[in-house]
Length: 216
Image 1: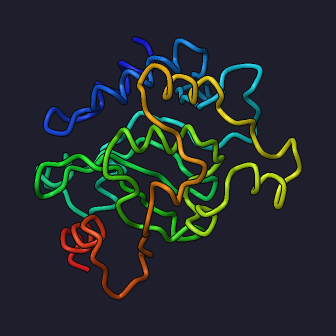
Image 2: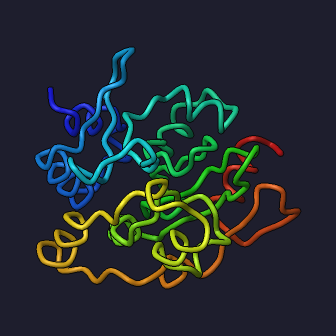
C-alpha cells in the first residue's frame, strides 16, 4: 500500500480526507516526497530530492486515534472521529488536524505543543486554504507571530541559508496550475486571527469544542 492510501485509510468514514487533499498528497508521493524512519514507518514532506534537507519540518503522517484521544480526554468514538491529527507543523511537537465542526463542515485546526507553540484554533476554514498555505513555503506553521512575514523574510532575518528549506516550488506550481488556486505571499493573507490554548475565552469554534469535550 502506498503512503497516501495508508493515510487515507486511517481516517474515519464520517470525516474522510477531502478529495483535493488526497489529490495533492498523491502528487507529492509521485514526486518522491515520502521518507522512511530508521525504525520503520513513513512520512511525507513537501520537498522531493534535491530540494529536501533534514531541516524540513512540515510533514504528513498517518493519523493515530490514540493521539486524538489524548487531546480530547475522551473515549467516545462519536467525539474522537471528528478529529484526525495528521500534519506536523512544528519541531516543538505541534500538529494540525482535520476537524468536523458542529455544522458538518471540515476545517483544518492547529494543536500547539504547549511547550512551544500555544496556538489552538481553526487554522484554515477549508482544505483548499491549507494547501495554499503549505505552498507559500514556511518550514513551520505553528508560530502565528511569523505569519505577517514571508518565508524569504524569515530566512533572511532568522536563519542561515542551509537551516531553512527551499520553497516547495513543485507544490506551488501544482497548486496554481493544476488546482487553479492562488498562493498568497504570507500566511496572514489566509489566517486573520489565532487563539492561544491559555486564553480565558475565545470565539474560535474549535477552541470551544475542545474545551467542552474535555470539560475544561
